[in-house]
Image (cartoon, rainbow, N blue to C red; front, top):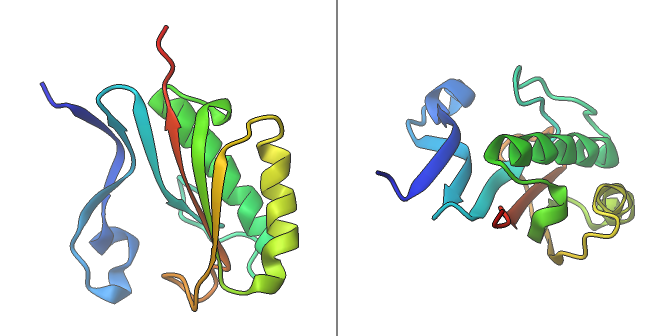
Amino acid sequence: MPIHRRVRPFNTRDTYPEQKLDNDLCHVVVARGAQVFVRGQVGQTLDTAQNVCVGDAAGQADQAMRNIAQLLEEAGSELGHICKITIYLTDPRYREGVYRTVGHWLKGVYPVSTGLVVSALARPEWLVEIDVIAVIPES
Protein backbone atom coordinates (compact mmCIF):
# COMPACT_ATOMS: atom_id res chain seq x y z
CA MET A 1 0.00 0.00 0.00
CA PRO A 2 1.51 3.38 -1.00
CA ILE A 3 2.36 5.82 1.77
CA HIS A 4 1.30 8.83 -0.29
CA ARG A 5 -1.90 9.49 -2.23
CA ARG A 6 -1.60 11.53 -5.41
CA VAL A 7 -4.51 13.69 -6.60
CA ARG A 8 -4.91 14.82 -10.22
CA PRO A 9 -1.74 13.35 -11.74
CA PHE A 10 -0.61 14.73 -15.10
CA ASN A 11 2.38 14.85 -17.40
CA THR A 12 4.02 18.12 -18.37
CA ARG A 13 4.14 17.08 -22.03
CA ASP A 14 0.36 17.59 -22.07
CA THR A 15 0.37 20.76 -19.98
CA TYR A 16 3.31 22.54 -21.63
CA PRO A 17 3.59 21.02 -25.13
CA GLU A 18 5.65 23.94 -26.42
CA GLN A 19 8.36 23.27 -23.80
CA LYS A 20 9.07 19.64 -24.76
CA LEU A 21 8.96 18.40 -21.17
CA ASP A 22 8.10 14.90 -19.94
CA ASN A 23 7.67 15.00 -16.16
CA ASP A 24 5.09 13.04 -14.16
CA LEU A 25 3.57 15.40 -11.57
CA CYS A 26 0.30 15.90 -9.71
CA HIS A 27 -1.62 18.79 -8.21
CA VAL A 28 -1.73 17.36 -4.67
CA VAL A 29 0.19 14.82 -2.63
CA VAL A 30 -1.35 13.58 0.60
CA ALA A 31 1.58 12.28 2.63
CA ARG A 32 1.09 9.63 5.30
CA GLY A 33 -2.63 10.35 5.20
CA ALA A 34 -2.41 13.71 6.98
CA GLN A 35 -0.12 16.25 5.28
CA VAL A 36 -1.43 17.84 2.09
CA PHE A 37 1.00 19.47 -0.35
CA VAL A 38 -0.69 21.51 -3.09
CA ARG A 39 1.16 22.35 -6.29
CA GLY A 40 1.52 26.05 -7.09
CA GLN A 41 -1.77 27.36 -8.50
CA VAL A 42 -2.15 30.22 -10.97
CA GLY A 43 -4.87 32.08 -12.81
CA GLN A 44 -5.88 29.03 -14.80
CA THR A 45 -8.92 26.79 -14.46
CA LEU A 46 -8.23 23.27 -13.23
CA ASP A 47 -10.41 21.39 -15.66
CA THR A 48 -9.79 23.30 -18.90
CA ALA A 49 -6.38 24.91 -18.20
CA GLN A 50 -7.84 28.16 -19.56
CA ASN A 51 -5.99 31.28 -18.42
CA VAL A 52 -8.24 33.79 -16.66
CA CYS A 53 -7.75 37.41 -15.62
CA VAL A 54 -4.76 37.97 -17.90
CA GLY A 55 -3.12 41.20 -16.74
CA ASP A 56 -4.96 41.17 -13.38
CA ALA A 57 -2.85 39.78 -10.53
CA ALA A 58 -5.65 39.95 -7.94
CA GLY A 59 -8.01 38.13 -10.31
CA GLN A 60 -5.39 35.46 -10.91
CA ALA A 61 -4.92 35.11 -7.14
CA ASP A 62 -8.67 34.63 -6.77
CA GLN A 63 -8.62 31.82 -9.36
CA ALA A 64 -5.58 30.25 -7.69
CA MET A 65 -7.38 30.26 -4.33
CA ARG A 66 -10.51 28.83 -5.96
CA ASN A 67 -8.31 26.01 -7.32
CA ILE A 68 -6.67 25.46 -3.94
CA ALA A 69 -10.05 25.22 -2.23
CA GLN A 70 -11.21 22.64 -4.78
CA LEU A 71 -7.99 20.61 -4.60
CA LEU A 72 -8.02 20.57 -0.80
CA GLU A 73 -11.61 19.33 -0.86
CA GLU A 74 -10.66 16.57 -3.32
CA ALA A 75 -7.83 15.59 -0.96
CA GLY A 76 -10.12 15.50 2.09
CA SER A 77 -9.06 18.82 3.62
CA GLU A 78 -10.22 22.44 3.42
CA LEU A 79 -8.93 26.00 3.48
CA GLY A 80 -9.24 26.13 7.28
CA HIS A 81 -6.55 23.46 7.56
CA ILE A 82 -3.86 25.36 5.63
CA CYS A 83 -0.67 25.59 7.69
CA LYS A 84 1.68 27.30 5.21
CA ILE A 85 1.13 29.46 2.16
CA THR A 86 3.74 30.71 -0.29
CA ILE A 87 2.89 33.51 -2.70
CA TYR A 88 5.08 34.25 -5.72
CA LEU A 89 4.65 37.62 -7.47
CA THR A 90 6.29 38.83 -10.66
CA ASP A 91 6.06 42.46 -9.52
CA PRO A 92 6.03 43.84 -5.95
CA ARG A 93 3.32 46.32 -6.97
CA TYR A 94 0.85 43.40 -7.14
CA ARG A 95 1.32 42.62 -3.44
CA GLU A 96 -1.52 44.69 -1.98
CA GLY A 97 -4.22 43.44 -4.35
CA VAL A 98 -3.06 39.82 -4.22
CA TYR A 99 -2.70 39.74 -0.43
CA ARG A 100 -6.10 41.38 0.01
CA THR A 101 -7.62 38.66 -2.20
CA VAL A 102 -5.82 35.82 -0.41
CA GLY A 103 -6.75 37.36 2.94
CA HIS A 104 -10.42 37.23 1.96
CA TRP A 105 -10.13 33.49 1.28
CA LEU A 106 -8.17 32.79 4.49
CA LYS A 107 -9.96 35.05 6.96
CA GLY A 108 -9.56 33.52 10.43
CA VAL A 109 -7.18 30.74 9.28
CA TYR A 110 -3.84 32.32 10.38
CA PRO A 111 -1.37 30.22 8.33
CA VAL A 112 2.34 31.02 8.24
CA SER A 113 3.15 32.85 5.03
CA THR A 114 6.09 33.49 2.75
CA GLY A 115 5.99 36.02 -0.06
CA LEU A 116 8.52 36.15 -2.86
CA VAL A 117 9.06 38.38 -5.85
CA VAL A 118 10.42 36.39 -8.78
CA SER A 119 11.58 37.46 -12.22
CA ALA A 120 9.02 35.27 -13.99
CA LEU A 121 6.71 32.28 -13.71
CA ALA A 122 6.37 29.34 -16.11
CA ARG A 123 4.21 31.33 -18.54
CA PRO A 124 4.50 35.06 -19.23
CA GLU A 125 0.78 35.73 -18.67
CA TRP A 126 0.96 34.40 -15.09
CA LEU A 127 1.54 37.19 -12.56
CA VAL A 128 1.04 35.25 -9.32
CA GLU A 129 1.43 31.65 -8.15
CA ILE A 130 0.31 30.30 -4.79
CA ASP A 131 1.13 27.00 -3.13
CA VAL A 132 0.00 25.68 0.23
CA ILE A 133 0.64 22.96 2.76
CA ALA A 134 -2.36 21.80 4.74
CA VAL A 135 -3.38 18.89 6.92
CA ILE A 136 -6.27 16.48 7.12
CA PRO A 137 -7.35 16.50 10.76
CA GLU A 138 -7.82 13.23 12.57
CA SER A 139 -11.48 12.32 12.82
